[in-house]
Amino acid sequence: MDKNERLTMIVFDGDLDKAMASFIIATGAAAMGKQVTMFFTFWGLNVLRKDEPIQAKKKFMEKMFERMMPRGPKKLQLSNMNMAGMGPKVMKKMMKDHNVSTLDEMIDMAEELDIKMVACTMSMDVMGLKQEELRDGLEYAGVASYLAEADEANTNLFI
Amino acid sequence: MESTKVLDAKGLACPMPVVKAKKEMDQLQSGDILEVHTTDSGAAADIPAWAKTGGHELVQQDKEGEVLKFWMKKG
Image 1 (cartoon, helix red, strand yellow):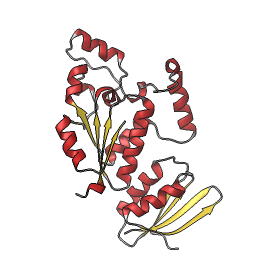
Image 2 (image 1 turned 30 degrees about the vertical axis):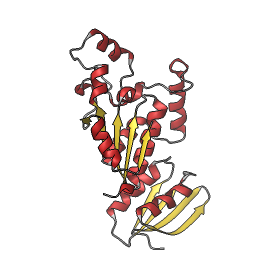
Image 3 (image 1 turned 45 degrees about the horizontal axis):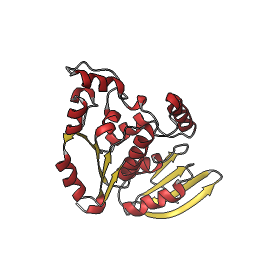
Image 4 (image 1 turned 30 degrees about the horizontal axis):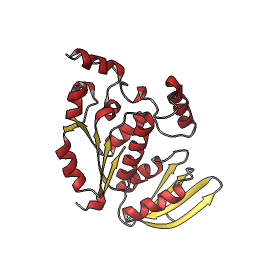
């Protein structure tokens, strides 16, 4: 496949605004006919968490992380002007007023467009996140898989 | 102009007009004309860029009030 036809992206941050930007670019690229792969690592994994809590056997610190990190797209904070949770509410209202899709809708759209979403297993281990806590339909891999894919793409983004 | 399919993307914000356009275009045959209506101001630049990248020909472009209209021939 031609390099021009592929885009890879590392989603490192778990902020609402950065996740929105990631999915807007990813779905836009898929619409332009590109094969898109998104790698979610560290805080970015929180974007993929299911809304409901999952019972899993965890160590004490892992439990703490599980509780303190945002559980899924609806719980994400803003990277700027978060204002103790007021910011995301205002942002969502403004997005709605401008007919911008919600993050949930964009993730569903990404799936429909066959965008490959990969969760970094190393950071899942570090932060104690289990596969059953993350949305279905993901792939699980590490740095070599990402680099192999990045090598075949002409656009690589780190968000 | 005779359109094979008309896509109403009015009210949708970036990136939905191009996402919907792609989905519609995938259903068409080479040479078919897709007509897209949108109110997203960014679409004035985005739809032509999308067409160019996808190898489709932007045959005609029009503006009626707030609504931008594009006619594209599938490549």
